[in-house]
Amino acid sequence: MDNGPIAKSRVFRRVMDYLGIEVRTHLPQRKDSRKATARAKGKVERPFRTVKDMHETLFHFHKPDTEFHKPDTEREANEWLLRFLIRYNGMQHRSEPHSRLEDWLQNLPEGGLRAMCDWERFCTFAREPERRLVGVDARILIGTTQYEVDPDLAGETVILWWGLFDTELNVEHGERRFGPYIPVGGPIPLQRYRRFKKTRTEKRAERAEALAARLELPRAALDGGAVILAESTDRPAPQAQPFRDPDPFQELRYPNAIAAKKAVARTLGIPLARLPADRIAALDTLLTQTLDKPVIEDFVRTHLKKQRGD
Image 1 (spheres, rainbow, N blue to C red):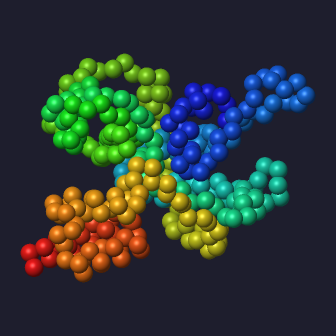
Image 2: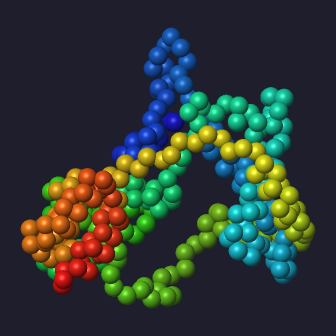
């Protein structure tokens, strides 16, 4: 990629490291006089531009006063996009004697595709640190939004890990991490802010809507039935590698058995030494098998909490 602001972002570098992606930037012009320097060609942006120019335009060709102006649900819109991508990838390759999809399948890596994490998990990776002082009421005020953190952090200087794509807040103090926390307080009143000046994109969208009122495209152009979807499922799926979750904020697993036992003791509200010997042995056996938080929390809820009054 080029040496723009994204390539220099520490958050971007950290997320790429979590996903196991190596970031390479091209050399400046005339840095090496013996050979031409590598340049970013925009190959990642090109497919998005193709979808925007070819598929998104079809939505504006439906009359607004008809029931076929837009998809009825998000699922139907995704099906329209999938049909368009299947048609597009089935077209002839611009330089090879086969389709684009066949060219892509022939050039897959030897180990197969690397699976990607889901969007919710990706949001937990994209976080930016900021040092702040927690108030005496264990709250942090960011603009007009308040977050209520653990009472033990009142009056302490902590590091806030802001999510770039969500509103959850993680807090780091020393070697411990707390959270995630969500905003507290009431909703923002409606009609509170002034109307902003229309951007160039909004003006262009209005012109497209005005053009759609004079043009008409039948719904069958996008809603092609299940024939194309059925043909796409006949091809065997390529080999794939599962996504390895680094879990940097320890949201899914405890770092070790000692940390897991401390969390169990805090959940029960008593020292583990006060539990019967057979239950302590069962807990030790479970911790040797897994450190997953959901599994351990379910064990505490069904075996330890339920039997404390025995």
